[in-house]
Length: 194
Image 1: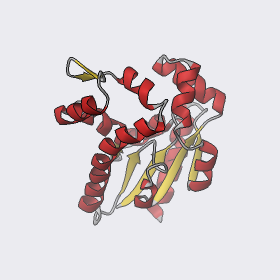
Image 2: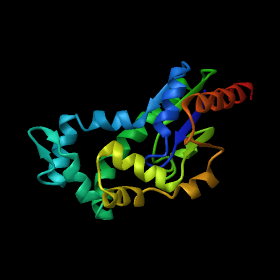
Image 3: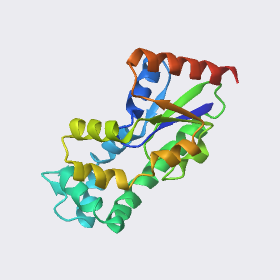
């Protein structure tokens, strides 16, 4: 199996690229979806409540409350990541071990690829990129958050300029859908030939 990461900072178009690839019939493992499942796990919610009192209300994680806590304090963010990322790491390793002998291309839709050192598992890295102002406007509109909240989230991620340096392929997502689709088809054809 050839494992291809699709990554990018918040609001840069990573999910759009992953959805196009999924629409082309390829397996796309969505790490954000894995995180959402973790947040629905009762054992996880108990750990979360113990670490961050008042972060769970009526059996549901209060993500806005939690975001305000962890994106303002790096130590608290690390505590949260320490209970989430071992689970995610195990899932990635399980997929790699299970599919290792298969002869096909699979994709990993993952935001914090470089930050968590998971690029070591990937054969090719595709970076979704866009200019800073477009990124900021996308996130504020999509998530209905303030510019200040956007900055807090964006500041915990590696700068996209540095991610470009670490990536194999960079796709600017500030283009019409059909152009992005053609670009990805060309990239995938190239990956399948090599």
